[in-house]
Image (tube, rainbow, N blue to C red; front, side, top):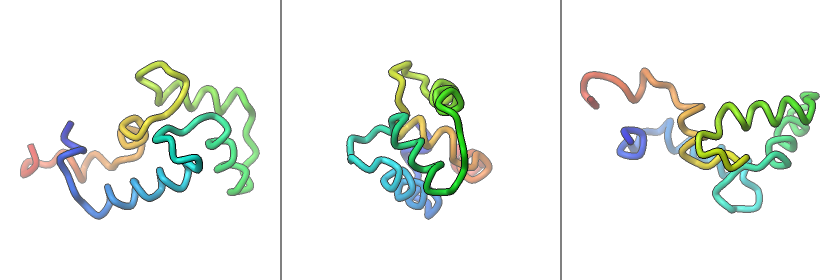
Length: 86
């Protein structure tokens, strides 16, 4: 995966954000951790909306968001998919 080969500042920042959300340090973001993020930002969200977000990002189908899935959803493709990197 091209993203894993990159060591840009943005990737490090996204890694730090993932770690902030993954409060139990398991390497995955579950529904409760995601709910807590919205709560901390004072954003009201339903359980159904959280489930929908996870379903959209969860290409492994395990009901959680792993680091690769998080990166795929949050990375700026223009940063990583330029002619030099390809």
